[in-house]
Length: 330
Image (cartoon, rainbow, N blue to C red):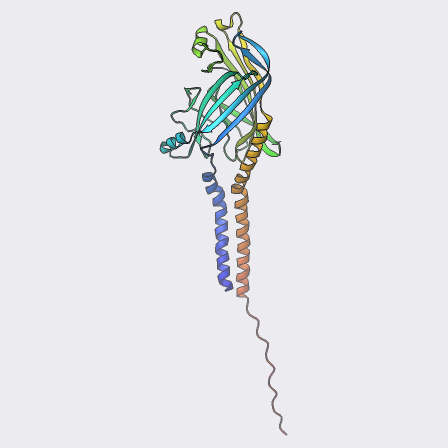
């Protein structure tokens, strides 16, 4: 009976030990993915910012500029692209909506971002665009890969439509989470005018006929939780200018927008809480279960060997019974 139990324990030990690396290196890369139907909204603010008044074409200081960023998973589009891509694909329809202190629209820029659900690498397919213009993204946007590394990554800038390195600057603690800090500087670059302008009758085409161009620079900062690859906080030191042309009169340039853009406090709390819950799931797949199975396999193996050793131990000889007394005769 002991030998049978020993063999069963040995089989379980081998199973648990083999399952440990399989779970970490085979199952996790295939199970960890961004859901196709994700929906999230982020509100950012730039206080005491500089904003262009298109009515007078002069820059003025305003108490606050608000940027609302929305990302909505397009399940139908992702399923259609998956048929030809042969892998799990996520399609995010994004919108960056900027409004002034009076609540009126300053600009709105739609995007479609198509990427691999597991690796977050861009997937090039029909419909990939920024503000209606077809683009071909290289590098990341919005999200880092699962198990982010301490290294530089390529990051796509939607304003300039170019990809540039975003540099790993170190590890920090952000509200109880260990995060990686990344920073990217985009130098002054000529960029397209938004297709939706805040003043009726002004379009990118009418501005282009005046010879006026739009220029942009930013310092982009992200604090990324490495296990999930999700940014828990972000900032931008953002500047835009209109340069040259008859639209500005005798001025060489005018500031269209300048401000230090930061996530609003309530959205920081919500994002940190969400990332912490997702982080626990990643830890379960990459650490807790693999190490737990390896420990369990070791314990089962030790128990199996102990039972086997007990089964092979020779039995003690039974104590000899006292001999019966012999009759005595005279």
